[in-house]
Amino acid sequence: MELKLIDLFAGAGGLTLGFTDNRYGGGFNCIFSLDNNISAVESHKENFKNCEPVCEDIEAWLARKPKVPKADVVVGGPPCQGFSLLNKKRKGDKRRELWEPFMDVVELSGAQAFVIENVQGLLKSPEYSAICERASSLGFNTAADVLNAADYGAPQTRKRAIIIGWKSGKSDAFISFPPKQTHSKDGKDGRLKWKTVAECIKDLPKPLGTEIRSCDPPLNLHFGRNPTKLSQERYRAVPKGGNRFSLQKNAPHLTPKCWIKKKTGGTDLFGRLWWDRPSVTIRTEFFKPEKGRYLHPDQHRPITHREAARLMGFPDEFKFVGSKIEIAKQIGNAVPPQLGGAVAKVVLELLRKKHRRVA
Image (tube, rainbow, N blue to C red; front, side, top):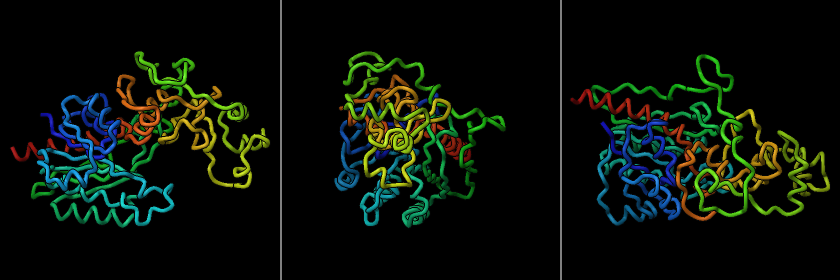
């Protein structure tokens, strides 16, 4: 039995991949997706041929009173910047309210379950209580937790808030949430050890050129940049496992004055990834070392788009459409499919139990 899936704020489709591909979770067929970024929509369209993609703001789309397709589950990550601690002006940010049209689609689709993915801050916000209240009014039970993608096989320590809702009833199905971890830092208790950067990218050769190439993956997204002489000197001054404080210690004359004045915080800035650990959280500007720990473990350069895609958990055959900047946004905004797959297994078992009871 293949269940129908709607993915809202879908991006390129990391969450869709986790729900539809048996390598991660599977069991679902994505019939409809929506995002307001045309490049992301084109990427989703390339990878999920049976899905009807729409490129539009969700509120504008709903205002046209469309025929919302019937589905078993609605998933999505309403834009997270409104909850993020990186957003210093998050109070009053309209993006905090986009869970409301999400829940409208849940109601209109007749879904028996929904999944909301977001930054950790969501679970400590007033909006979390409002989401649960709205879900309850529609007949849903809810559960929530913060999950680390590395605990489910992604090569990245990305922590995300997951809210899962399911229709309640007299013979309510039992839900096993959070999903049982398959990996751990030390690999004890029958779990596998966290996947490392080395396992994911060490086989790649040094990047060639600075543009996207029309060749077979993985080399199509494995390109470099044109760093300035100053940037190259800074890269070389950061040792294995080092960061901006290493740069300040080894080459103070190369260190930006604002970093020298700032004695604390930002320990990942201008840092090198470690071969023997998972990646840090991959964000949309992973190609800028000043934004995080995005220097290659031993080569004097930032990681490439292909390396970032692998560290996000995407398979090489996944097709990204758009410019270098647009593809970077799609990668950095994605849900690691391994994490999506772990949640998909919970939802699949829940819905199968409910279907068996109805039958």
